[in-house]
Length: 259
Image 1 (cartoon, helix red, strand yellow):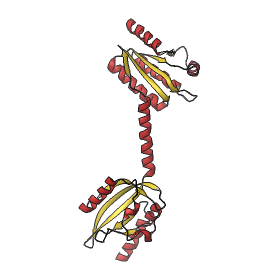
Image 2 (spheres, helix red, strand yellow):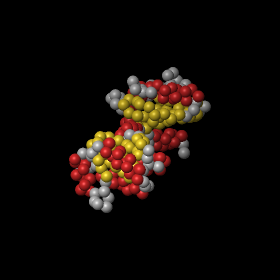
Image 3 (cartoon, helix red, strand yellow):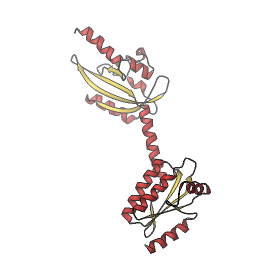
């Protein structure tokens, strides 16, 4: 295969790639871009004429992480590969999360760098939403507290979901096993209760605790919650509930004394 054909095939491969790619020449002043593929144009909005001959710092903006930029500079100085994710900006000013991989390439006795760039904005946003959701769950599921010998209590706030109930079940079962609790009080006065609230998950917690020799007492039940629970539960799965927390504590103490 002659060199011209090789170059044509290489350009076709790069232009057909889903990743933006460019070559830079560190021997020239200000380390300019000497080649960019069509995907780079689509990703950034900059044409080849606006890209070739310029240092790719034009993608940086006010929220670009200086530490990430420094990692790139250091890798170039040491002639090593590096992968960083940083916020860059398109020609129209739109920001996006850019995963940049830079690799040194030696060709014809000269050093070049090839950089591939992938828009990972959706991935970063999903990760942040997941982290925010996890923080929300941790915030809404307050720590289990021992309020008396063998009596544990937890107060719930906000909206309940199947995932929150799952986490709560795990937390309570582990706590009961470790502390040998005979009663657990769940206060739901701070919960937002609607038609989608998973009532059966509350009963599942009761079943799990009962199998561990522990009883569940629920306080702070609103009139709507009481009606919903009554319509979903039967005599075979009674839920012990109280309007006031103090009543539940006194009942738990009596139960503990009799056990």
